[in-house]
Structure formats: structure tokens, C-alpha cells
Amino acid sequence: MKLRVLGCSGGIGGDERTTSLLVDDDILIDCGTGVGDLPLADLARIDHLFLTHSHLDHIACLPLLIDSVCDLRSRPLVVHATEATIDVLRTHVFNWAIWPDFAAIPSVEESFLRYEAVAVGATVELGGRRITALPASHTVPAVGYLLDSGAASLAFTGDTGPCPELWAALNAVGNLRHLIIETAFPNTQERLARLSRHLCPGMLAGELARLERPANIYITHLKPGQSEQTMREIAVCVGRLQPVTLRNGETIEF
Image (tube, rainbow, N blue to C red; front, side, top):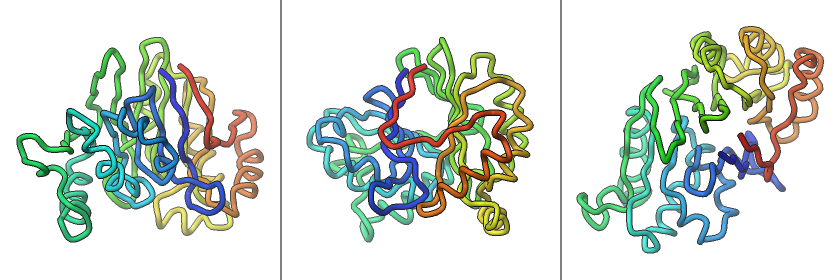
């Protein structure tokens, strides 16, 4: 499997793009602003979208994506998400007031968009690739995802604060090779990190201490203007694990 980073920032401005990860050429993990940089032909190849949660920085491009490619596709775009996230999309986005309901266009039976509910621990297999929903702890119902090629696995936490269940799940993954984990705030904003159920470097250190397997660690969801400070603090807190900043345009093969 090959993961290409379209966006991994906690905000926008300049070259910053919010969370969106392209797997091979047909699977998307979250649908932040980075999706908008893809050519139309590449957008039309995406068959499956796995959402971690309903916050805007992770779904911003979904309405425009489906609108842009619906007439170029012969089958619906399948959105995999928790029941709670699907309910938010139906109620607050694809509700005809904010955006047309593409799950009913041109008809419910032959719609451009289809929802598939996922639950923590459930696995979706797509052409030999296994995608499993991981536990997460955020201000809205959220999950991470484990991507398993068979040869190796990559875990993406999505947005999460401290979550013991996540580490129990990851420690059971025998072929874990890569871990993409968020750290949204510097230590000076620990109170905000806890309120919003994100991580800061000190909290990240406590979480990574629970990881019992070796893995390449990538830091995502850094806030624009604070990323250098946050990474300096991470180097102090967990430098022995050699975490690196996840970068837009980066490719990880596993």
C-alpha cells in the first residue's frame, strides 16, 4: 500500500492543508482541504472515503468532491464513518440547505453517494487491503484507522486526546510499522489541548510510553505558526523515539 499526504496541518494559510491522506489511488482517509489540490481525474478515481470524525477540517472538501466527480463516475462514492458522523453529515451538510443530498441524487437507489457505518474494531477489506477502525477520544465521536497491506501496517490516530484503548489495540498489531499521531498544541497550551481533546508534547510522551512495539512515528495536525515550537518540545519529551513531522506531499509505502 502507498499513502500520499495531501494535507496534514491543523489549519490553513500559505502551503498548509488540512487532513487528507490518499491511499493508493482509490481510498481517501479524511477529506480536508488538501483534496482540492488533486486533478479532476484523480478525484474521480476515489471510490472510498474513510472519515475519522465530523469536524470541518476533516470534511471540508467532501461536498465539493462529490459535486465535482459525480457525472464522471459509474458507481457511488462510499463514505465509511461512524453512525454519529454519518448523522452529522445528513443533518448538517447534505441537507439541501447547506448542500444537496447526494445520497438521494439522482435517486436513492442509484445515488452518487453512499454511507457505510463503521464501528471500533470493525474491518473493511478492499482488494486485499484491510482497514480497521481504531479507538479515539475526541470532543465528538471519532476513530482512527489501521491500514494493513498484509506485509505491514500503518496506524493513523485521527484527532484524539489520551486514549488507553488505542494503545491496547496497537500493541496487538504484530506487523505495525508506521504511526501517524496528532499533536495539535505546544505545552504552553496544555489546558486547551485537554479541553479540546487533542495532545500537546507532554501528553504525547505519556501516550507513546504505552506503545510496546517499534514504529516510525510521524507527527500530524500541528497548528500553523506553532509547529516549530511544538516539534522542539516533542524532541525534548520523546526524542529517543525520533518522531518526525509529517509533510504535505510525503509518500509512505508499506
